[in-house]
Amino acid sequence: MEKIKLDEFAERLSYDLYLSQPVVKDVLVAYHNLMAEELLKDKTFRIAGIGEFYLADRPARETTSQFGDSAGEPVHIPQSKRPAFKFASNFKRKVIDTYRVD
Image 1 (spheres, rainbow, N blue to C red):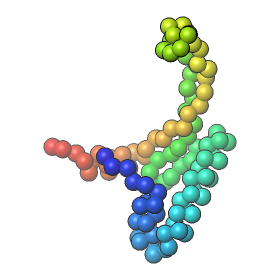
Image 2 (cartoon, helix red, strand yellow):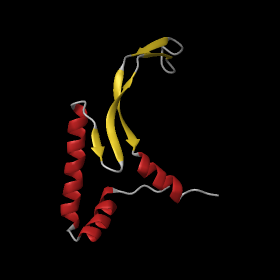
Image 3 (spheres, rainbow, N blue to C red):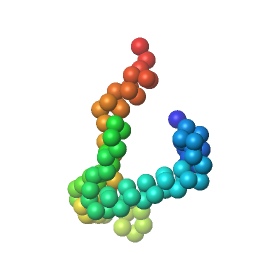
């Protein structure tokens, strides 16, 4: 699966929206910054019909050190949060139906 870069995404949107590529790129960057700000406030950022970004809790856990002088010793990793995404069910169905192999 190929990744799409910001410039290419902005170019495709600018063509569809009849806007200049720099304007579309600025909008995408501002959208990204707004999303990050809201997540840092521990809020959910929903994009209707696509899904929602949120901060998920990662529980504290124990692991074993793999490197250095402390290799083999237990290490405590504290509780934290991580960004997560949950697809909207209608979006998920559309993608699954598109790529279904019978």
